[in-house]
Image 1: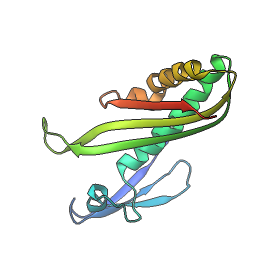
Image 2: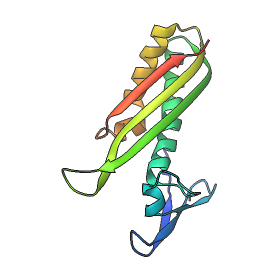
Image 3: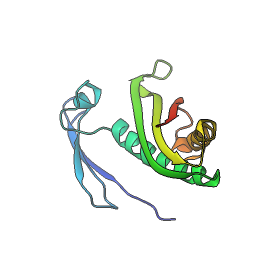
Length: 147
């Protein structure tokens, strides 16, 4: 399996500095980052490590869930996956940490009932490689079939 690469160029201090994150392997773009915007309610046109983790987690989870749905005898027609990644203070060690991740998925699936979908969704939460990498963060799941 391939290794994927991203690169960040940072200038200045944490409070006053800024940087650019380059998605080097895919070459799809370079994105601005800064700590003040990372810690603010409004991102103001910049991304953050938490948003990038959310993107990775939602994509990985969708792929894993589609595989588990197929293994259970269903056919995924559409999966809408959102990952919310929260940053907060780390009272035990100082600084900050990821304080939680919420995965929300709505699916249109042929061949599985709600219980079968819930079972596949829960298995995907535990089985996707990004979830495995983030075992130190509480991950919650809200999964439902759409009519």
